[in-house]
Length: 388
Image (spheres, rainbow, N blue to C red):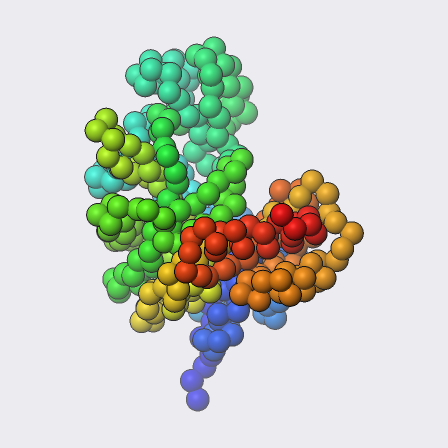
């Protein structure tokens, strides 16, 4: 009898939790390195080792089968040590560093010819001043490591404000880069999965709707998108996955903007090497979800079909509101089910906190307008216990 394959996930958030659902169906044992037993993934996965992903001994203690990630923050030197121990790590550290360090990522993307805005490393106030002048003050200042959901990003309104920010942040040992602000008209996301042996499959390009730096909605496929540009975005995601040697799911977040002739163009914003918020729609709107595909890919199994199962699927995040309603979440879910039987609810087992991602809903349909309306209404009720 064949042994049950094991995939070890480093990180205990909702991405690991949703991987577990697919692992059950695939007959894969999911092993988890968790910071706490009551974490989102720790609540539902049986094979849990408590530890710190920054500690090599803890990583060695949990590593079994194939190692993959719920986040990108594991030190790459630890991953090299695991590989030296004979452990398969996907994505590998050479790829993962491009999702950990924005300046490394920008330099690599520029090297392979991917579209990126003008950028520069900022190691002094003088560097910041020079970059400000080079882009006529259109500066986005970024922490090269650790930023997410709008954190670690600043938009100074004057050179003096930029100088003050840079002096303060460098004094706090925050590594910095500057890039030219992109006058984008919307944000897009191109997801792709790649196996170690090279097979690659991209999903349809989606529109990502952001509020305060957090994705609140994903619409698949991106409405009204030029077919040629959509094909280019998919090809770009495949190229980046191949050139960087990514294994598993890769999300390429993009800015869509208009050039001087009014034609739509794209520039790469961020990379994520794991299942991604903008891919949650695939759970209910695609033949193969990003979570199943990630598990297939990291084990070098054949990849699944990525065709959509409906003309439109919309994902709406459930973010903790300013106050937590008295109506229990279970009752809120029931009322959503009663009003909208087509809504698929996904909760993360997280306690309420204002702005926190505590779940999402997926809705598939024929019309973008109607499907978005239902998704927004359902998510709003789960947050507030009130109908729009």
